Length: 379
Image (cartoon, rainbow, N blue to C red; front, side, top):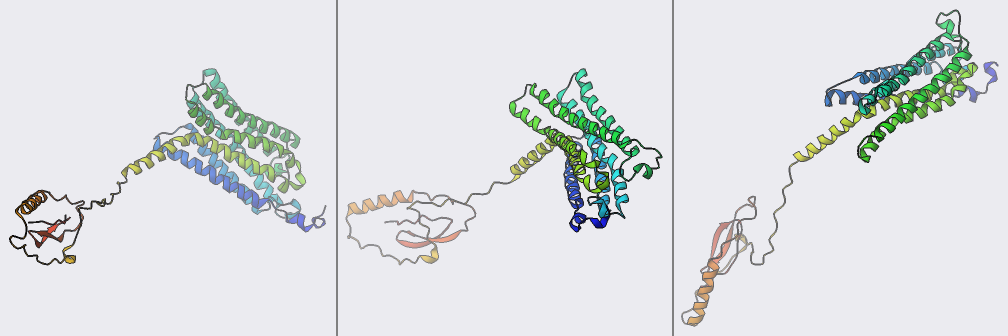
């Protein structure tokens, strides 16, 4: 059908921007997880292993895969082939060139997860052969899949693009891709069930078992993404509109690859979380205690009177013979008891010393002190 026979709405359909957004959102998440894992291994644990190499290599391959797809979107990937006739060949060529990077970025993290399970579960020699054998077999199957992609009669005759005179029937390549995708999903399920069985047999508290299972649960999410990707495989058979029909399948390839990279990093982030918790607790201990304000006294007998606010007249002694001898004796004893009372110490050292007024021997006098017990001295 000629391009002019399609409606404008049909020709304007474009899934390319959606693909680009999904690519770089998940690439950012995967790159963050990889950086945290590597930093934890080098700075916190002061050690590194082969699993770190596989994770780093997988993330690099995933970034290259995303970059090639982004350039392919620039040339029309995500739009209908009828709308990008001049650049369709370039878009498909970049898409085919990105396929091996995407397949390997999905496969290599399974080897990293197998190494982590070996270190944490201590399997027997027979179990160890299964633990490493299945991910390695998955890698071999993926490599064969890449070879078939470059030698089969895919859209726009990629065998001519790569200088191959003869090509494999595309039906063989498609059927093998079904097998490879299903085996990849089975590998994800295997790596999900292994820690459940192994950790539940350990003599650990239930809380610790649950934490360990949650750390490895992201592998199950990757397996679900693989199964969803299998459902979109028939859409890539539409070679007449390959640039548009292959987008849904490609989206799930991107999500699966980045999720399984994150799954390989999550178990190694537990020391990082402990490091942050210890650092926070250390900082809390170093914060000085806030000084408490001085308590106000509620004693009715203590009245602070500044000298500037007290002006007492000079009192004259009572005339002789105005009181009886018994009253004079009682007043003398009362004065003696009150003179024996010592003033309370200052409440705080920060209170500025002032001059206060008191009454002694019937005369107003000024005394320097931080606090004042105002009392009347009777003669």
